[in-house]
Image (tube, one colour):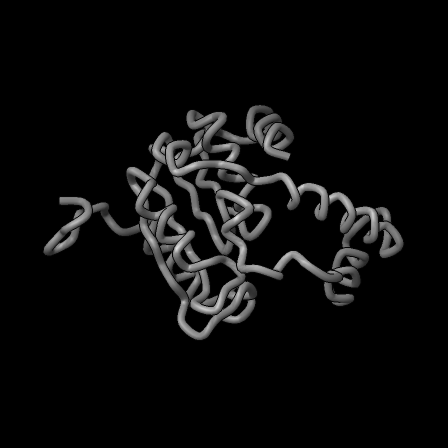
Length: 179
């Protein structure tokens, strides 16, 4: 998927771009940023992991909710009946990927905003490790929100993203990590 995204960016838009990904899409965006940093100006990484062990235990077990299949069916040219094929591919993908390290993250030089819900499917410690490994990382935790934070708190998420892009980058009033 990252290769497809890279090909799209190369032929369709002026680069570098502000790239945003949510959940599995954030993982794709991270792989794009790692493979082709020249194409990515900033990265917003929402509710995802850099290594598959970053998901909370049990999150990837069981069946996907019917509502996800219904939503897929509304927009897919293949229809709702193709949803089990997608689920099988995702199950395989989640068993082996992502498998990045904090050393890999240290090579992501563009400004990166990591966002997760305070009750997300991502282990909080994993998100903090990502934030700490990124040379120009920022971390935001949305209160009283889950893995569905983009639907639960759209105004807050939009504000965080706008602030990340619109506010001049400073190290703050009393920096510690960025001192």
